[in-house]
Image (cartoon, rainbow, N blue to C red; front, side, top):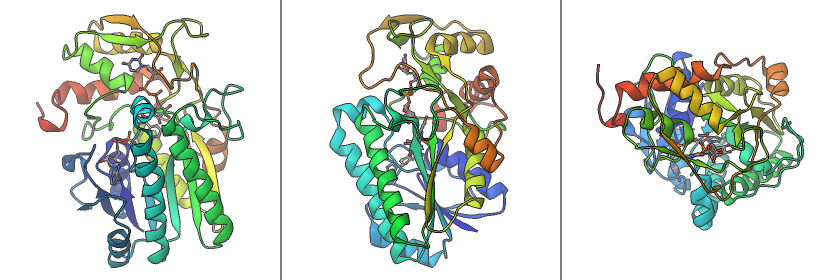
Length: 332
Ligand SMILES: NC(=O)c1ccc[n+]([C@@H]2O[C@H](COP(=O)([O-])OP(=O)(O)OC[C@H]3O[C@@H](n4cnc5c(N)ncnc54)[C@H](O)[C@@H]3O)[C@@H](O)[C@H]2O)c1
Ligand SMILES: O=c1ccn([C@@H]2O[C@H](COP(=O)(O)OP(=O)(O)O[C@H]3O[C@H](CO)[C@H](O)[C@H](O)[C@H]3O)[C@@H](O)[C@H]2O)c(=O)[nH]1
């Protein structure tokens, strides 16, 4: 298969590219490098620096490379930023995906795996979240992805050849198990990398956003899925596409950990101090999100290898320790 990977220079996309290459697929990465790194792209993949808005160029790349499927990771993905810059999120994530779909149509490419998110659920009515839990996002990031889900359903209803699976990731964490790839965002807003940078002494302390939530220790609860397990889910999804259908599946380990528990796991794995202070709640944060992941297990046979939070943290610690400046430098 020749797979076009949008956002393949980013955190999750680069891990998926590596898996695709290891499974003998040809890969073309398209990324505008706004938040990605050229150094994160596997050397055996082709790379084109391009924005999703370039419909005609995208279509030409698909035709020239005889692309058979698209993995679509490219998006802006910070909840807080989406609250302050909503138009940027709708333009990039929603309109950007429309452009990609038009390019696929023009190039006769019908197979798509889309990166959706548990942020489409908002504050859930029930836990764990299953795929039919009502989706009412509480921030523009979640809406920008939910609008795309609707577009994909409408496209599949209108086009008997179009085959799509949207994976609703929970919180993605960890780094490649061989230390070859990591997580390097500027700015960094995600809990796990911030904790590891604090353990390294690069940050003075971590601010816990709220300890007055209705959870056992008052801090938010999330479901941390390992990036390599998530990459496996994409390869399985490619094998389960069905023409005329757009299906949506949760990808999480099915267990929640509070921010406080996550900090403790980082302290245990690193053996370092992680000074913390409690701050205000962050706008757009639901108190508790964790998955019912039965469908992906039953339908794809997907099983996470990193169901234990400390094992997950250990892979990330390995990369952060060896790459204190991210993709900028490496120490042996
Ligand atoms: N990280 C998570 O916990 C998480 C959870 C749920 C869903 N997701 C989704 O997974 C996908 C990947 O997330 P990530 O954490 O790897 O983010 P990331 O920022 O590391 O990667 C996104 C990549 O897309 C590129 N990009 C963004 N907009 C683009 C555009 N218009 N044209 C071309 N390239 C563009 C960026 O340069 C970057 O390399 C996103 O769609 C995100 O919404 C992430
Ligand atoms: O400095 C920090 C950073 C985060 N947090 C807390 O840690 C938890 C995790 O926060 P992240 O920013 O790491 O991730 P989110 O929970 O905001 O994840 C959301 O954004 C992701 C993309 O960035 C995914 O789309 C995911 O599905 C969506 O729920 C949240 O409770 C947050 O309040 C802190 O307490 N302090």
